[in-house]
Amino acid sequence: MVAISVTNLQKSYGKQVVLDSIDLEVSKGSVFCLLGPNGAGKTTTINILSTLLRADGGIATVNGFDVVAQASKVRTQISLTGQFAAVDDVLTGRENLVLIGELRHIDDPAGTAKDSLNEFGLSDAADRRAGTFSGGMRRRLDIAMGLIGDPEVIFFDEPTSGLDPQSRYMMWEKINSLSREGRTVFLTTQNLEEADRLADKISILSKGKIIAEGTASDLKKLLPHGRIELGFPDVEQMNAAAKLFQNYDVTPDNDTRSLMIVTDGSASQIARIFTQIEDAHINISDFSQKTATLDDVFLKIISDHEGNK
Ligand SMILES: Nc1ncnc2c1ncn2[C@@H]1O[C@H](COP(=O)(O)OP(=O)(O)OP(=O)(O)O)[C@@H](O)[C@H]1O
Ligand SMILES: [Mg+2]
Figure 1 (cartoon, rainbow, N blue to C red):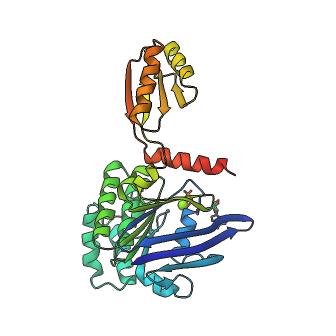
Figure 2 (cartoon, protein in one colour):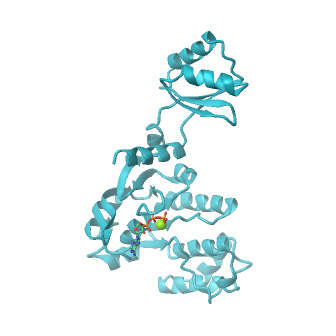
């Protein structure tokens, strides 16, 4: 069951190509994460899918409805929490929520607003003007507003930017529970830990193209496993070892007197490295094996992609 399908989507602003024919597919009830650096086109994609912006070409559907030909149908299926708060500063927190409830024709706007204030830790501030809220409180109110009316498909554009660790953690729990309820979540983030924790599927967008996609563990496999880090008692020994491993991908760190060596992950290669160190009479003070983080993958894929241009 497909919730969101995007084929050959294109968008330019003047001469600047922002989306250069992208394809995406998001299954119903899953959490999809669009990852990419500043200016990659994440917000543009979300705006097209949520009918706020018209693409130049391609087809996009949400729950089977075309975002252009059936835009009003699409709007009944979705909610969008944009990158910048949609909160009305003149209204109180409660009034903002009730207003959205009324706009979405839900049964009990006041009761729903009360529950949602409670859920998002805003009960104490409920009757203050939103203009007096802190950045994180506005963000939480904005997210709460997005969820009023139990939308089927939820777009979050960088939902946790500006949240403190506790609120971010709460948001992660919320996203997981939405997905357990069968709702589809489409989110963008720059926070790789977030993508790693939440997403069933991640696509990396860079310069208008999807340059990699898969689960977090699929993406991590794109990096060689088993990098090892060797620590040395002094910089001289470190440099001597760096010379020894010229044929490897080696990154020295003078501050910690350590070398990061990329291996193929095989025990035989690691054994060879230690044998070479022994034979050269170089002392090591410690060693550890590192597995790739999504951060490493993200940076490597983007830099490889840019290098290929
Ligand atoms: N209305 C517009 N007119 C002209 N250029 C625009 C417009 N909106 C976006 N752009 C450009 O399109 C590119 C993609 O913007 P977009 O907001 O989609 O990026 P993003 O991936 O969401 O970035 P960020 O991580 O900073 O939010 C940027 O170079 C931006 O300057
Ligand atoms: Mg954006």
